[in-house]
Image (cartoon, rainbow, N blue to C red; front, top):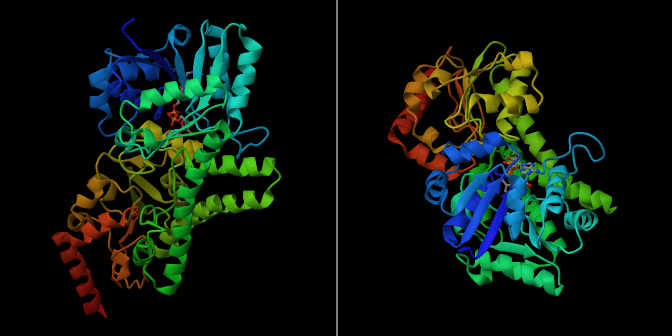
Length: 492
Ligand code: NAI
């Protein structure tokens, strides 16, 4: 037909949907069909009521849908018709069995390979876009060899995705690099060139890195491990700052101006969340253990351990600042998504904090601008909250409802809208039996960097200290800080 290439993508999730929409936008002569086993998911993509939230995604999909971008549940037919198939299915940490809690579960990737082998009647390039353990390409090849007719040739490539949720569309449109791993055989190199030619529609050739398959698979795990390691490193320093009176934001700035270190990803936080960091590090740890490299495994495991420590430390801080008891106290949680500009809640630190506070019998009220209640409940269940405890949690429809008569507010997602709230008004509506509360600098609380006569505590999770900085410059807030300092002084 009129199409120069037919592409099928298996998995219409956070990666498959945005990635294929961007390919469709830049390659009008490529037909892209995204398939999924979930009919509900596909129906939402087709209705325009997208199953995921990403800035600029809705317009992008609307502009291409039914032109050269299609969403379908007909997996068989679309495998048959495709020249190139992206595998973009989920690869979560295994919950049970061998390697439970560490190894990645590749059952969906294998299921895709079996479907492809079964349906294919012509040669296919099969591209692993899911993040997978090193040597998964070998599994795919073995499945293909054992299950298909000898006349059909399958060429497996690795092409991991580096997009970040919340900025997926701009990351895809202007990627830092594209990584493609392929075999050194002539058919391997030909397949690599086909995939390169897709990306070349909008990415400069020198940004497209080609490697062997194992390097490509491993690089994705290493990239995420390094990113998470920076967060854990800074979080470990935050504990030291609290103990010494150093200010962690100042330390981050002072350290990050060294170009060898860089200033990105140095903001302190209550701990990383998201579906990838922990899963991919554990995947790396499992790989190191399988290769009999226990020191390497222990080194990377400590990044996850530090993250657990930080979440735990933050929950304890809240309880101790509220006189070691939060029983029946209303605590507002602003933000449930694992970071701003996404509705994704997978592995969010907010759920861990809520779990700890519910165990202390706190009265939790959550507000998040994008997360649906059922997704909150699912994630709380997944992170181990009992049904009877989940029932005690309230979901508020506005930040005011969540914070009214609260004892403390924990801001756990750095949503931009939270920086523009009228905190003076919110503060007035909180509970405040006055008491002397002498608190040292903590990375989470800028109200608390001054001794205040308040029982009201506001904790901030500021992944982006720049935001907090703006925040401090707002006149109402400055007034408020001034008033607080003033009250503190007058009480002394
Ligand atoms: P997701 O869970 O949002 O989407 C996966 C989709 O695959 C689901 O809709 C599921 O129904 C579908 N699926 C499962 N088995 C299938 C099958 N046999 N045939 C067709 N569809 C099937 O997952 P997400 O977040 O898109 O992640 C996909 C992969 O990309 C994972 O390996 C992840 O580690 C990796 N990744 C994720 C990033 C992210 O920010 N979410 C970033 C970079 C990589």
